Structure formats: C-alpha cells, structure tokens
Image 1: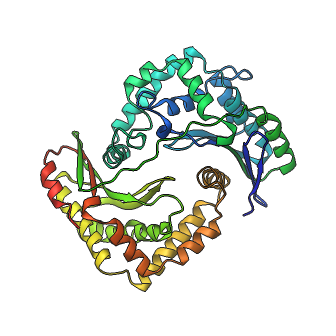
Image 2: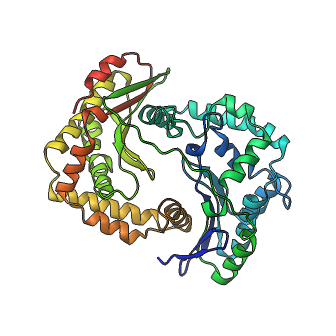
Image 3: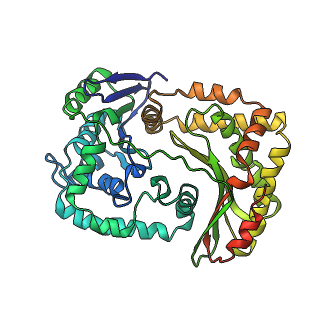
Length: 423
C-alpha cells in the first residue's frame, strides 16, 4: 500500500491511498481532538459537536438534505468521537466519490450549528447516554477508565459526558471549541480506494486551503503513579456481572509495544487463547473473555474483559490472575508464540482490506505518530518479538500494585475483591 501525503500551506495534511482495482472509495476527515481535550465543564462537548455537523450547512440547510444526498448514492456514512480523535467519513461506490467528498467537506467546513437543532439534539444525546447505561457490556470501560486515570483527568471521564453538561451547552460553546481544536494543523483528510488522484487533490486543496490556521489547544498529559491495587464497583441490578481487570501499559511508539500486543494476544486474543481456554472452555465461567491493549501518545492500558454469573465473579477474577502469574513465571512456548504472531498477522491483514479501514488506519497513524505507519512495519515489529520479550513485559506490567478491577453488577463486597488482587 502506497500512501501519498501532501501538506497545505496552512498545515492541513492530505493522505491519498489509491487501491488498484478497488470499486469503492472512502472519504475521511479526522481531527486530533476528543474528550481528553475537554475540561470538566466541557465534558461531552466534542461528541455533541460531532452530532451537530450533520444538522445543516449553508449549502444543505437541514439534516434531511445531508442524509438524502448520501442515501441517494447508497453510501455508508457516519462519524465518531474518541478520547483523542474525531472523524467524519463516507464510503461509496467509486463513481460517487465526488458526492461523498463534497458532502463531508461541506459539513466539516460549513456547518451552521443551528440553535434550534442544538435544543433538539440534547434529547437525542441524553437518550444515547441512557441507551448505553442499559448496556453494561458497553459501559464497564467507563468505570475502568475512571478507576485507572481518575475522574479529575480527562482520560478518566466519559466521551458522552454527564447529562447536566448536555443540558447546559450553548451555541457559543460549540463555536469556541471549533475554533480552538478544528485547526488545519490538527486535521487530516484521507481518501482511500479507487479514485482520480489529480481531481481529488485539486478539490481538497481548493476547499481546505480556506481553513484558517491556528494553534490547537493541547491536552493535559497523564502522569499518574499507582502504588496499590484498586477496585471500583458500579452497583446495578443486572442479569450478568461485567468486569474489566487491567493495568497501566505503554504509550504509542514504546520500545515494547509489539511485545505487549503479543502478550495480550496470548492471554486473550482468540478462542484458543489462555484465558478463553481457562475461563470458558475448562470452567464455563463466561460466554466471552478477551484481552486488549489501548494506547495513547503518553500512556496506555492492557485489560481483560468478561461477562459472568454474579456468583462466579470471584472465581473468574482468581482464574484471570492465575494466568497473569503463570505467564510471569514461565515464558510462552515457541509454538504458542508462533501462533500468537500468526493470529495478529492474519487479523491485522484482514482488518485492513477495505477502503474505510485503510482510511481510518492512515489518518489515525498520521494524527498520533506524525506519519503513516504501514502494515508491513507493524508486522515486522511483531515478528521480532521473542518469548523472553513477552515474559519481560508481563513481569513489568502485571504487578500487584498496578492491578485495577472495575465491575458493573449487584455487588457490595469491595474489600473481599480487593483482597484477591495479588499476582
């Protein structure tokens, strides 16, 4: 895959990722901002603003006109807000790329933020918050992040924000956030798939060159230090207990980032992983259990997540911790290491088959790393990991004082759970 990067005079970066023979194309505009760039009173504003971009522009004054323009060409389109990035995207048949590019450009550059739509959208977002509150599997990560990062740091707050904030935001709050964070130097436009590079580049240069330059507001770095295991319980009447058990981990570009990926894969990266075998297959404690890594430019986390019967919570935690101790004591076998690398290679290759996945990977990489990290580089890094590397990282991260256990369910015995947290 060849990525062609162009930088405009105002600092905006363009990635062109042509795919020979592709019959689809994706337009993605990503800006390096999200909920970690908000203070406590702004929490939820980045996500609310993302919604407002679809509520009207000068050219298309209503949400209906925006959606009809994309629906009429069979587009898959949406937007998302994360903790450190926000993106707007549309995937279309290549012959309709001009429509997608024109519309995504229009909403990004010319949204009018109608006050009446702000009022109406408050209700929709509050319903979105309530929807996720009824889905503990989707919100246990909020409990975990608040535990590991603390609610005084933006990384420890939710992306959707509290309802009180949603009800209080004014149009001037959106306009101020837009000026402070949606700057050209903080923005990447990526086109991936089948398209005419010359025409696309000319269109992007013409439209985005008008974006006024400015210095984006910096986020608050995370520099917390954990010295004892911690437990957080969100008491809720549920049919199943949701848990996340994890530790602080490495940021982007850490020397051991690939060894960490292999470690997470060995522990819970597939249906033959250690945790799936021990927790589900041997003991029937959970329907699903998985391990994952989340990285930021300045910090990271490795977590295990599972949903279990209320009465089997302690047994599940003990089983997970037993696997942590095991991999600290004994390095994985050569065959297990080989299998984990092959799983990572296969899943990553499959995940980057489509134009929308390629666009998101390229834009995210450029936002976070200042360059597009090709798949080949990642796979080479994974290939170099040794069994000794995996064990060394396990010993470095999986320590008693670094453990964090977050729970949603009808539980009160916090002290009893805290006593289990030993590796």
